[in-house]
Length: 127
Image (cartoon, rainbow, N blue to C red):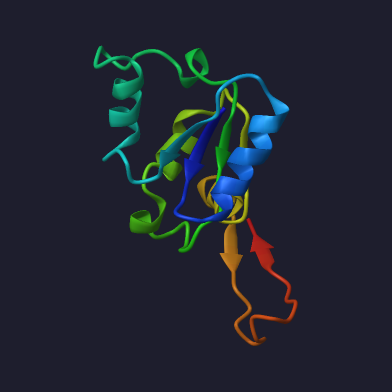
């Protein structure tokens, strides 16, 4: 399992929970630890040509919650490239990670700024 951390403390909770569900290692990578998805794949390949698939190393990807917006590349690091480059592997997004999946696949999240943070609000999703 590859867990991409979008700088959120909840990532530790995800890591702990996942670690109780599998005997396989859970690898956590900060979303800005590499300058690009290609750099990350090259690191996985042992600095050889990054031609192998992520599936050669992981069964799935989990994108953590975090601050920011999917449309802001500075907030997302390698996340958007990870989604675009890995349509052949299951990807689960939590909060910001889920928003990033929607963003990559063409959905626009429109925030309802009319309510205080402690009240419920609806999101309008358009495609």
